Image 1: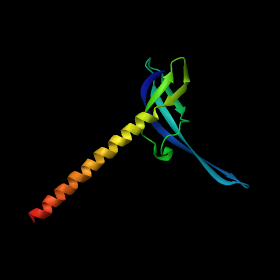
Image 2: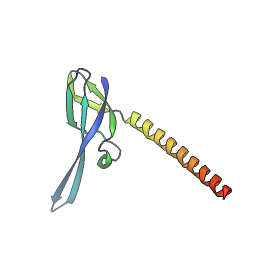
Image 3: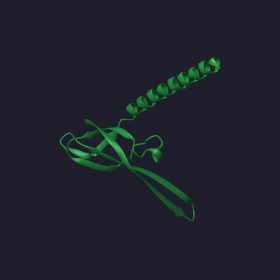
Image 4: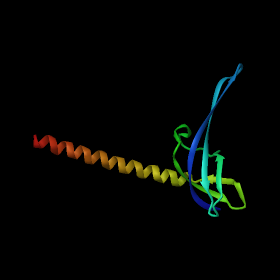
Amino acid sequence: MDTVRGRIIAVLKDVTVDQDNGTSTTITPVLSFTTHDGTAVTAHSTSNLPDPAGSYGRDVTVHYAPGDLADFTLDRAAERRGEKLDVVVKALAVVALLGAAVVGMAML
């Protein structure tokens, strides 16, 4: 499988009302990516993205079969690594801000 970067370009929300089962909501992200040979692909993402309702605009890693563009999968492991890095960066920013606040208070 080849690997490229893709982006969630839309999030579809389908609400179904059933008299017996009540209301059910289905959230379906729409993915766009370009293959190595320049073919633009837009497809519904059936992968279990974390927070699919908030996935609009998210960059994702896409693995696809060059012979069958409908055969693709998202690299959730890479996304989790990216999320962990975001947590570390944000934690360091909070520590730096707290340190600056303490120094500022001490200088008063």
